[in-house]
Image (cartoon, rainbow, N blue to C red; front, side):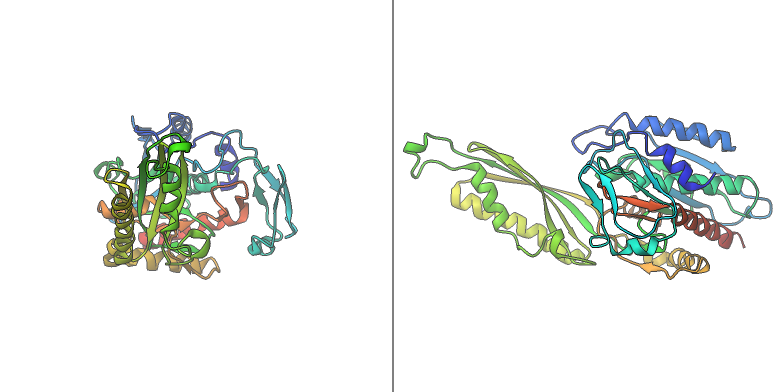
Length: 404
């Protein structure tokens, strides 16, 4: 079975995670895909395939004859889809022999070359899009499909390989995906997450990341008698936003440039809350951003009274490059295998997070490979069948290289 055929089966399973949940997995619906994958893995011949109580799917493919001393390689992808856009009732649309032009998705949305200039380069491929009403879920069900297709190839005995360790994790999209993976049981010497963009990508740097929540407690009195008494919590929340650098937002930054991203603001005169995610590749600049937020809290409490503004900062993950550097053979091997497919490796910093970052800090070096997808987390998400085939070929090449 080709990888894209598996993808079409997986995306119809609703697996959106919930960042407000305090359980793992954050949503029970992720078990629906997990159990489906365990059944499929067992049918392929992965006898130890299982899903644990926290929705971590794992399985192992023993080394082929003569390759028992090869490194144990892990391949990891995540089950959940991002809460940014609906992942329920996904209806993928297939455009065979795509002509490279704009694509009318439906729901008033059009996938255009103006917004996505790479589209013309996909001409002649089998393009898979949404119907405009949901995300597609290729992030990261494409990664799952590609790893499962790799497993099928290896089990058929078509490629020499060392032991292969497979894991599908919950809740990556909300920053919790790597927390409870049992690394001792997983057993890999190093791993790759298959969770990136175009098929030629190799990523081993990511943002230092944190979440910041300001809570504002106002003073509500009758507006006719409010002078020198009222503190409008909603206006204070707006003031917080105005105190941050206007150009340091996702819409104004690229590559290794950091940002403050306002994700939610709500409230009234009496109470308000304003939420940010904070990102920077540079550890010192990241620390400076957090200090700016603390200074805003201090300044506004000095202005409106102690206790008016309270700030909670939660650090989410760190830049994996610090843990990858001692094991750069993992990256160099991936680059060579990408080149073998006639592609030029695209070495890009991740402007987001990945399970690989947390896993690297837990002791499992884990760079990230592309899946062949584009425009994740929304209704413009798309991928090609041929791009997914290339990723499978890259994964096979990595396995063969380490088995030599």
